[in-house]
Image (cartoon, rainbow, N blue to C red; front, side):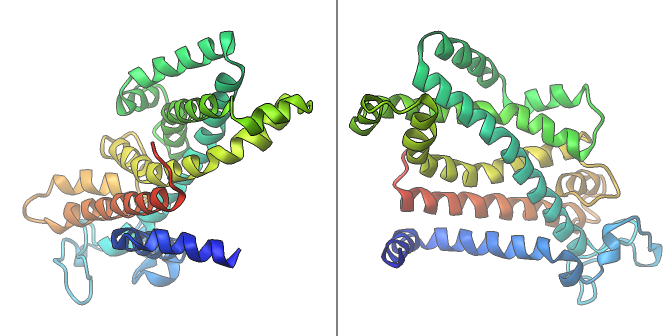
Length: 281
């Protein structure tokens, strides 16, 4: 096990950018997890007003400045990371099992099962993801839970397509045929023979997708269809701050950079995992 871990880390660390991505993700996750303890003004993450310190430029007191009602931008960014990470994890927790399950069924059984599942998948894939999420949110109240539902509804087809292709390629491998010959059940074939060999690709895609899920969720919030005030959210901070450009430039710029950093971190980490696990999309 130790040798495998050493070899895996060696393959991962050959790309310095992947290590940078891992560092970014670890720092953001820890900061978000311990936000009440690491932020300078945790009370600013709630309904809070301090007009005496409103619209202050970055300084030693407020490292990233304050917004138009006196809340610390750095504090709200870190708490916004907490919301974004939670949304990303919940969305993938919903979308991945659905997509993987359907992909396994379509690739293994084929015939009518494959036709029905993959044609429905093609319909969802034909619609731009953000457009589909906007359409769903148009019928729902703009809350965090509904934003998760909207993004999850558009994300499962990508995993269905991925696992379907992997299952088709593994369906006629020697070890799968051998398991069939000795009388293994369909459930055993799917969960013990095929799924474990698809996990590297699934895990790599999940890491890459976390950044994109956060980006889509921030886009919904930017349009006013995601997380609602006073809950800190990176997308809504950018949208609100854009009204005060260029005078209060730090209000939208730093949350925008925060989105860039977290998406970049997950993409670099995903690239490293892809090299380490020898995954080819």
